[in-house]
Amino acid sequence: MAKYEKRSADEIKAELDSYNEKIIDLGESFKRDPSIMAEFFQFEANFYQYSARNQLLIYQQNKYASIVGSFKHFKDQGYSVQKGERGMKIFVPVTASYFYRKGEKQATPLKEATKVERDLIKQGLIEVKSMTRFKLGSVFDIAQTNCPPENYPKLFNMGEQSIAHDQVFCKLKEYCESKGFPVEESAEMRSISLRGTFVPATKEIHLNEKLQDTQKLGTFLHEMAHAFLDHGFPEDYGVIYKHMHEFEADGLAIMLLTRFGFEITDPMKDHLSTHYKAFLSKLDGLDANQLKEFSIENSIDRINALYKEHIDDFLSIIDEVSLSQNDVSNDECDMEMDPWEQEM
Image (cartoon, rainbow, N blue to C red):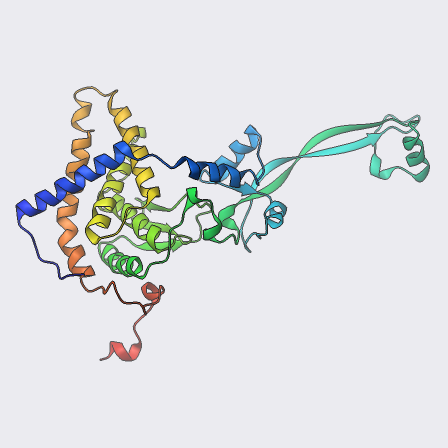
């Protein structure tokens, strides 16, 4: 990457205008490839379908659950649930067969029939009845198994390995943490649909550890935008805040990825487009006073201001990164300096 040089106000304005136009164009025009959805439905067909009651139970325990199955079902697909994972409880139907012995009013389970009674049952001389009852069983999300990310359907593309993306992530992670926002790659996200989250109460950014370098950088920049934009949860937090915040975080992430020379992934385009259109639909129902607070223009102004505030720092930091270096481990973020080197 060429050494960064500060630009004039006119150059910065021209750059921001081009980014803003790109964000709006993506929001208006992006549509998911239908073949990706078809592949997902095909993939999902290999897994159990659940009743409305069980779907509600699963949602209450893990609202981000995506592809769910029992321990045995994942095993039948060639995967195993990882050690220590806790399942989500659902109701499992169990059919019980029983009969009545002569002179008795209490039912006897079929499995307790004597040899003589089994012979009579075969002859049709003793009637067998069945009833269905429910017991609690456990199911798991695919994220709780050892299914590798490359085997996920494209709808849940977790990205690819990239030394360039990883090096930029490491540098910007340090910067983010220096501003008081700790970044953690977490195994606690029991879903492949949840990429990351910002926790306003603790100022922490959590990233799904299953993300590969390309998706990880984009997700990190999105959550970092939430942090820097101080996206909290006001008392009157509603759906419009959610869509506005997601649009703003996507917008800033797209601006930064573009400035760093990286492609915008389809999942990010899809996410931006979904929340942009939802935000617009909510704006239609607001009065003139409310539109002073909520508008696309206001959101664009906020992300432009944040971009201008931090871009010089970002670019001077990653100026040190050699994007052509091929011998850097992806574990570089976690490497500590040797004690001997610290003394030099």
